[in-house]
Length: 355
Image (cartoon, rainbow, N blue to C red; front, side, top):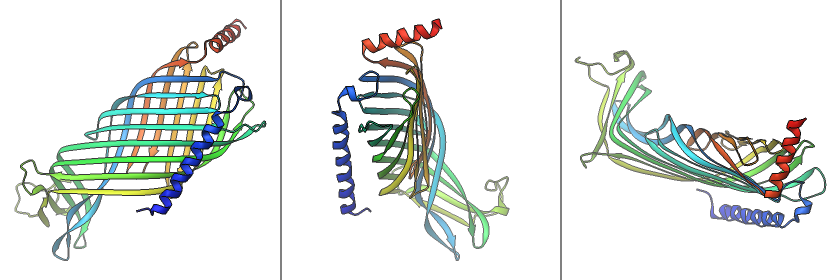
């Protein structure tokens, strides 16, 4: 567990960055880049998710002729369909990105999450400006397996063996809470409103995993494990209708295991934004978790059919301590901006079409 002193220092850094963000918000609009004071793109969407979730359980293993319980790490993989809501935009020098998603059934799970990120720049009068931001990630995975089976290869008494576990019901809840302040420098490129922002971030993750092996008959036995030598298997499965017996055959008691942990990670990465008169937009984020060797890539692209309506897509590949997700969400994009600027955009577009 992290020390309270370290957590307090982290919270003080978050507060300081929030205050600096609101200071950037107070900058006069005339000092900002040419364009509207505000613009937002809102996209209800639907799409696909590939999910990996990792948790620990204790299963029986053979050792020196005896059966003992050892903690094993299990990773489950699945994919499914869901929906969400993406909002991106800015007000003066403050930008907002918010992504909500829900996938009702992936890995027999209901997965709900939200990513919110607020950032701002401080004007300098030159092409590079200080950049500060504050983000928050919340992801909850609620899994309920019935007739859960799991196989794992192992060495038993020095020989290759395979363990087969069956549980009447397995319930896993995984919750990740992760605030992350960022500091960096925004380099404004001499093309439309393009920029690239290398940054450093400090991410605090509160991860709470609860795994339960539950008996449907409310007794003390939640499942059963058998371990077979590899040369005894029939096409990779336990042999049937033979006189052979498994090396280990044992009932597994019902269990309720909680595993709350806190992590503090150093992140380095870059944001970028590319556009063409706001009608084509691509914003992205790539960062690397130095402490745990994890990567995250996030892309949001929009194409507008006119100044009010378009199409937007959201892609993310995100590695967290216990969960790895790959998302792809697509939907109609609705644009909100000042009416006067919308008329300028329309006139510019019509002039471009005439030429």
